[in-house]
Length: 154
Image (tube, rainbow, N blue to C red; front, side, top):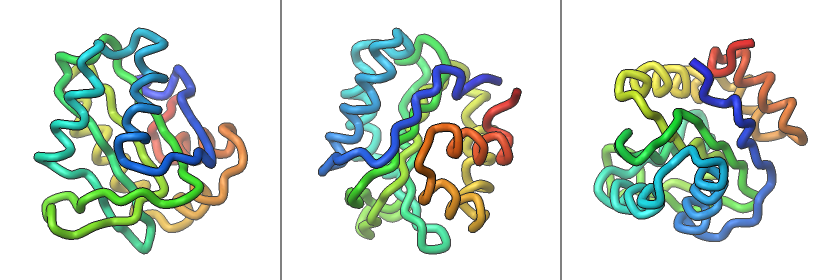
């Protein structure tokens, strides 16, 4: 499963809202023909209904995604943010989470979602991996963490 092969990894971006983050990552996916034109709107709608913010070991992360019918080819786009953006907490839409790391999932096959989510959660729970992600200064450093977490297979 190659979900990072397009290397959509962006570090230290200055995005000020959840919608800015969604637009930024969706544009990157769309420009590579990985998602359909409706993907952005569907991500926004799904996030309103089912928030994806998580705070694990003090790290604020989000994993926005939408239905596979809006995806042309499976891919994950990652961005780290200069300043945190507010997301609502997964499973509790009243709690706000300050998010600095966003993994946007564009998965073509429904069965991929469970496997990817499990690997991401395991990575989020690994303080060493998360510290490495937060302090990464190059996409190669991020790729190294993703490889160690089983999200990139070489």
